[in-house]
Image (cartoon, rainbow, N blue to C red; front, side):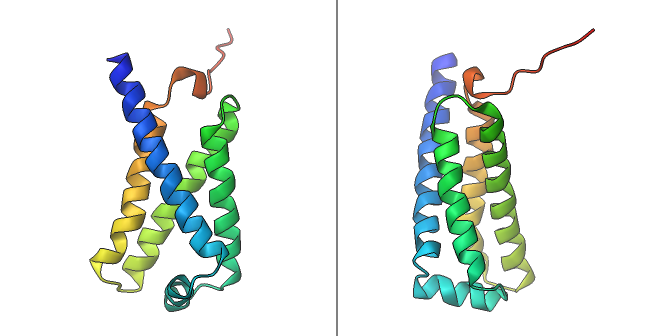
Length: 128
């Protein structure tokens, strides 16, 4: 069971990292299709740079060992970015196919977070 959880963690985490890095690069280089997407959603283009940088930093935080508190913040950031993307697409009336990417990354975020090994979790200290 422990080995299965570790496999699930690493597969979901590596796919999450790949998805966040690739979409982050697309946002940082301001690829034409992504610029059109942001414009359609009504967001300012400088937000692409902010999100791209945050995605890159979040991937580093999730992949490097130690620093469990920073990992929690990275997972939270991924969760808010992807749920925000889903809500934005729904609110703008985009076709349901536009939800696939953010929904997949949101799912990978949740699976990676849930199955992370204990050495990547914050350990609560109980006081009397």
